Image (cartoon, rainbow over all chains, first blue to last red; front, side):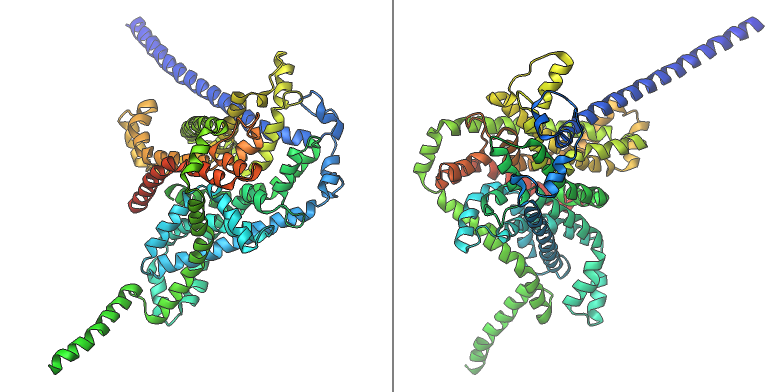
Length: 302
Length: 304
């Protein structure tokens, strides 16, 4: 009797431990898989950025050697960029200021035009508002680079060649459709009764827009503002075509000029690229949560 | 007689009133003026900077002889091949990776959140910076990639950007590197939007792992996946930067895509009309895409 129960208990314990071991083994495998995939993803993501940082930290002569980490660490090239110490970098701060100005203007105008139009279509329900929305949707799906050649011609006709405002106009035209979708989508979460009661109390449309609509839309404003800023910062083609004079040039155009020369000072280029990349990276990580919320609304649904 | 003339005079007034009402909708006079004033800035921007260039472009590329010249150009012929490969491989590999990775990032834990922060870096860093870095990385003599290959395996790597196919491959890989994080985030949000009850019920019913993905997750994500693929196709078709900075459309102009050949024709060989024609030759592909996409986007808007 006792031997039988003992045996039964033993087999029961064995199967239990088998099951436990199987679960444990699976968990180990899963953890190992996660770690392996994480490692691959990190290497994949970091390599081009590491390359950029590595070269920027090398003295000029060391770039043309075979190595995979800097032999001598030096911040010479960053210093060179910041003090405009290389003849390629003579106008760096001016170019940087141009880029900043362009980004700021694109952001402000996209927000202003985007909210005004969305307010009129979504809140005041202007007739034929859907037509404007659809036309904007069409703009969203036309590749900007396909319009570059006629746009260049037209800017020559308008007399806006080598003027930052030509690029600002193009970017605002291409950023506003996205703004509409985010604003209209977000605006649906604000009950229309809020506007109506203000209207009954005698508020004018301008007052409703400024005092009620804009404050309630703040999160969407942050999302779209960040998007517009990043769009301007990532853009190259229109700046390359429209801004070629010394006074109007921006950082991307200058960087591309580096690239096309035979004697590219790679360490200075990479330092410039990193300094140029800093503002959007900071802005992105600061507003990340709001960005992704906005992107899923507008970026996917249109 | 008299009565009839009164009616005749009164009728246009009534008609005018209904016309005005149909334009204004429910808005009162002053409010309508404001609503109109709020839309005017966008309409002005649209007419001056979108509609006018579109019409101007259509006019520039309206001669049939341009297309004969264009199709006979060997550079254009290789451009078409490149564009098709770039689209087919770039979009599909990227979207499929994004679909898989969005599932991976659904796993719980702080590590996944931290990893996601690193993973989105390519998207947060401006493309000009990183594409220039990749360009130098692929340099045959001093580039990072060949240095690593030599250091680890004693292999002499090739001059990646001097061969047409490896240069195109580099552009495609760079594109995938840059944009996979973005679409992963979108699909991740799409997965998060699937109600927890559905996932739990599916689990109870035994739909876990692959069968859960095939029967539950993918059908719910399919529409989103299709919209993302179409949008990404159009974005990629208009992509100028990856080709310009990574391969420089080289070697010897063999690496162009439609977005870059237009600019090259217009500004390097000074034939703007031929440039517009190159872009216009993409229209037979773009128009159906845009129609499907607009329809999809509108139904998606109605559903939610």
